[in-house]
Length: 275
Image (cartoon, rainbow, N blue to C red; front, top):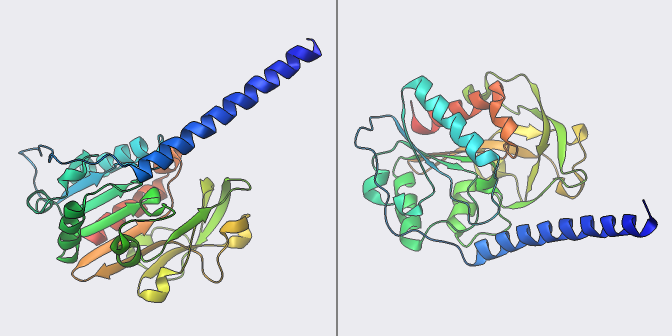
């Protein structure tokens, strides 16, 4: 192979990678600034019984193409095994008082970007604060900024600031700061292979949340995603009469097949929904 052919192949590869990066950035940029909104509520199944779980997976920002379907599959399996009704949708218009009243827990499965109109935001806030349950998975807390202050300040309790990059995916160890039924099945140190690890601008434990899992920064290379003091990864808290459970774990689709992780999510749903 001649030198010019090698150079040509190299340039082709560079252009292909650059084009992919540009596409991903454009999809994220325009999805965040010009989100696609929904105004027509979906038709819910007529045979739902309680407990009932609503899985919301709209992505107007970065799309986790592996994690969203893997999460949907995991949640469907969990619901089937427990006899719970479940409805999955990417339509933000489901966030209205009448339809939300039919659910005990809403799971935000790797949502991203602005997903709800002002009226939909208010309907969801009122439903949650009046006794609903929220479970947020990975990207549901992974936007660099939010147009909805209540969501990041009151519901999540912390602002995402970045994730591991050197390398992006790493093995790491999580520790349990407290003993809690949600994490009772986990060992004191729990390792997850090749995940993307989030960092936040503050520790939600300082404002009333209970940190259930924290990262041991000595077990991986946090780089710019290091946090001073405790590095939370999973937490819970009450929000008026409602309950919030969030875990930053879950970038890769394969993570959703880990039995301990599946049980963590199931226990988070049970706690949030009080069943």
